[in-house]
Length: 95
Image: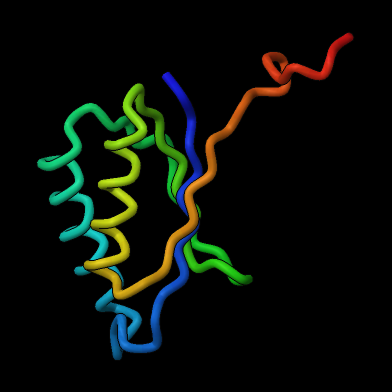
């Protein structure tokens, strides 16, 4: 399985009250579970920087990750960036 990082930044219109974040999170999680059944969610982090949320997922099919990122963008009125990750031990930098 490949590991991906999905970086999300909320639009100012995403929610009025920070408590709404929990409601949105539940809705997004349920939709992704239903529409991306082969995606394995590893971890999610809230951050205070350029991005609001960092999600780490695993999948064999890049299309599932793209669909999940699209769901996040649509439900949260956010922008996302998706990165494919390679573990250091597998990174091809050895001579």
